[in-house]
Length: 480
Image 1: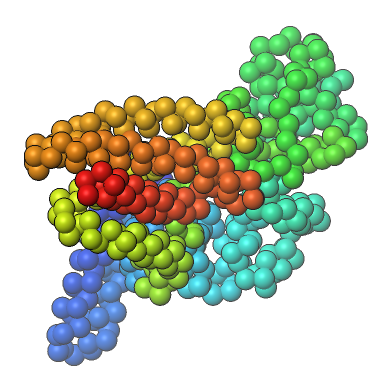
Image 2 (image 1 turned 30 degrees about the vertical axis):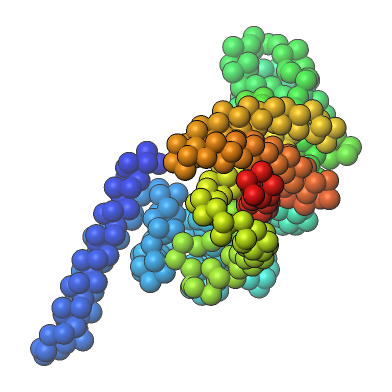
C-alpha cells in the first residue's frame, strides 16, 4: 500500500521539486542517447526505455500530496509540466486542478480530453466543483451535472449563481445540523451514524423544523455536557453568520478577527443554506494578498511563470505604456531646465537622488494606505487627519535625510547654497510623495476602482516629475 506524504515544510517541498527536476532531466538525457543509437528493433527498445525511466518519477509523484504536486507543476516549464501531469494518478486530477494557480490550471485543462475532465470533476464535492466550474468547458459542466442527484444539482446551481468573490460561491454544503429540543445523548448517537464528519467540523448547527438557524453547538461543549441536557440549554445563540451576497474578502477578515473555523451562511429569511470553512478563507486571504502585490506593480492578473511570451506581453503592456508616458513627462520637465543643468553640471548628478528618495517614501505611504483600505481600517472621512500625519512624518524625514544630503553636496561641490537646495527639495518632494500616497488610493476607492491597481506606477511618476521640477526650479531660482 502506498503511503501518501502529508504537506511538507518549505525545505521539504523544495527538496521534492529538486528531485522531480533531476528525474526529468535524467529521463530526457537517456531518451536522447537511445534515440541516437542505431540498433535492431529501435522503436521497441526506445519505448521500453521510455517507460522504465518514467517509473521512478511516477513512484515519486504517487507519494506526494496533491498540493505539493500542484506546487511542482507551477515551477516547471510547459513541456515538463505536461510530462508530470500525464504521470499523476487520475484520481488526483480534480484535487490538483483546485490547488494550482489559475494560469497553470488553464494549461492543464487545455491538455486534457473531455472524458478526462469529466472524470476529474466527478471526484469533487459540490462546493469544490463550483470552484472549478468557471474554468471548465461548458459541455463538461453539463455532463457532470447530469451525474448529480437532485439535491447536489440544486446546490451546484446555487453556488454558480453567485459571483466568484461572494460568500455564496465559496460555501460548503456538507454540514451537520440538529434540532434544539433533543438531548446531548441523542446528538452523540446521531453523530456515531456517520462514517466520518465533514472536514473542519468544530460546531453543529441548530435549526428549527423549517431550517431557520437558532444557534450552534460547539463539539467541545457537546463532549463535556450532561448527556441528559437539552441542546437548547447548552447551545450558543450569539453566532457570527454570513449572507451569500457578502464579499468573500470581508468574510475572510471576520474569520481572522474572530478565530473562526467554520461559520453558517444564511439567507434573508434566516434559513441555513451552507457554511464557510477556514481552508476556503485562507485561500481567499492568499489570493487577495497576491492580487494586491500584482496590482501595485501594474500587472493585470496572475501570470504563469513559464507562459508564452505573447501572454506575458499582454499582461504587462498597459501600465508599461502609462509608465512610458509619465517618463516622457519627466524628461520634458528636465528639458525645461536644460540651461540650468548646462551651467551647474552637479544638478544632473544630484537630481535622481531627490526623485528616488521621494518615490521610495511615496511607495511606503501608498502600501500602508492600500493595506488599511483592504483591512477596512480606513474611511474616507479620515483622509485629512491621516494626510496631516503623513506630512509631519515626511517633513521630519526630509529635514533629517535632506540635511545629510545637503552636507554631502556641500562637501563634494563646495557650494553651501547647493546644499540648502538639496535640503529644501528633498523635504518638499517627500511632502509631495506623502500627499500623493494618501490621495491616489483614496481617490481610486471613491470612484469604485481597486486602489492597488497601478498605484506604485502612479506614485513613482508623480515623485519623479515633481522631484525634478522642485529641485531644478529651486536651483534655478537660488543658484542662478
